[in-house]
Length: 219
Ligand code: AMP
Image (cartoon, helix red, strand yellow):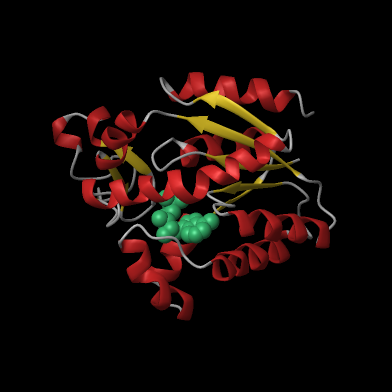
């Protein structure tokens, strides 16, 4: 099975993707994580896109698809099941993904969208903190006050940091782009009869059970 996990920033795609990959043995690609690591490592693409990402803009289609292609090619011999998290995000990326799956003789993707209202997303995204060491994601609203500054899991309690694009200002731009450019992707999948939507609010365990309810129909 190949899965596209869809949802606005802060919908919980990363958390759910990790669980789904563990249960269904899918290889996880988060284009956002891949792009952030290119920026940290100051690769050629990383340097080109750093400013766009910081302002909440989308990276050009060909560059993102290049990253996806490279990832699939590198992992294809070990797996035929991928989870795409944060991709496709524009109409041209739908076609690029379809061609890529076909070129690698992979089955068409199942598409699941996590639905969360914008008001909840603001609280989730602005409260998000990431361990500077292991990149695990925490939320300050779920932590007690003493634990906010550092990772409770890593040795040496490294500091938790905030993504540069997780501020209120940048989030509103990311949501504007999501509604303008990424929602049409959803509509296209919906018209093709490929889309399943689930309620992404509430406890992550409950969301995971809803997600598994959909995915178990695919097996
Ligand atoms: P995310 O972690 O999924 O919220 O992505 C963070 C940022 O990476 C986005 O705001 C975009 O700048 C960039 N990005 C991630 N995936 C894509 C994509 N499929 N197309 C264009 N830009 C992307």
